Image (cartoon, rainbow, N blue to C red; front, side, top):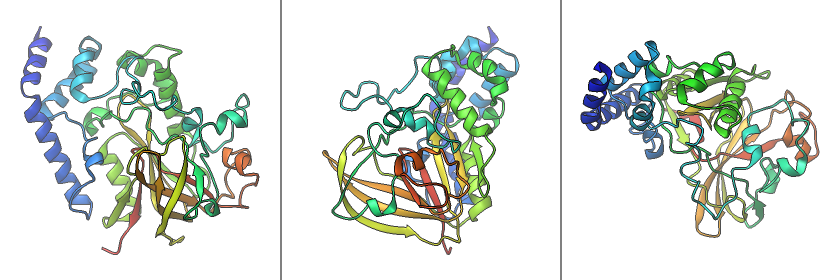
Length: 341
């Protein structure tokens, strides 16, 4: 009964708490990042939970009572709970096919699963390509740029630290969020945890950021406080053979590695962030059927440590260390580069 009364009170102050959460993040941003404001889309991912709500939900988790208040938690925290809370922003979109299967393989450098054929892996566009394939006036078949769960928010750092986050705890995690086996959500959770627990390849530094503060800390640790953030403007051009407009090199110093952060499908917002040596970054205008998209492209020039069965080599016909490999930055993905300050 006490929990019900407290949760009712939390609903009343939800607006105030959301404002407090936004102000708290803005202060953290100002203290750590040498930019006046975060991009609107990134700021929108900050947890709407205020201090009182966060404290209450932490208490419920510690007392194993969150399941009884799961609906309220998911709504207030803006996270995905249950097996059916998937692809909220794209489920009614009849103009695009379902999320491409290869999207979830993008961060796995071991190689293709044995049962996956090349035709399936490359459906809907090229996930990897050569730098020479992106020239002004040319054409390229763009893959699915969508984030399968683009609407979800981060959890506050103190709350995220209480959530089980390992393959060994996947049953506990599924129970916490009302997820059952053999569902898309269960597969998303397992895939993300596997990516996060994989050992980095030689020369790679990586982390899985489960809060906005964790992500900022990783960026500052690797690049310092004076940085710039780059992201693809929208998902226009997905599955289309687009016309390439201007191609602008925005980061060409191969001695200064940028930080690449990829949004992961998970009940709450998680980013897989990694640092690779010898990466160039381009801003590319692509003319889609509906409108222009300002896309970000990353090109990796150090591929000698990648597995020879990596999807990129299967598609492009070369092996590790022989070619550069480029890819688009998907919806909600980002690249951070160092500035002079």
